[in-house]
Image (cartoon, rainbow, N blue to C red; front, side, top):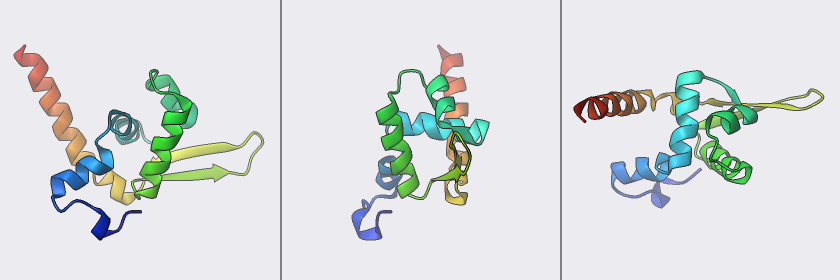
Length: 108
């Protein structure tokens, strides 16, 4: 997890740094709207993402405290990803982006 000193001074820049690439946005979208996901769920719903890029972005979101990873001691192993409480606090941002996107499409 980043320290306060490592984050940009601007709060908008901080938010963009944490969630601002297209893959993180889509990963969080899945978790906000669909809840807990397995790795394969992300691959199915974000078809353009490679397994390596997905892994890297999930790890980054986990390191930033937005996503938690739960490993189940089963054969074969099962891993599930979900939003942390901090991650769940992003919901209003997604709701606002969804509303804006609907309005934008309607204006075309």
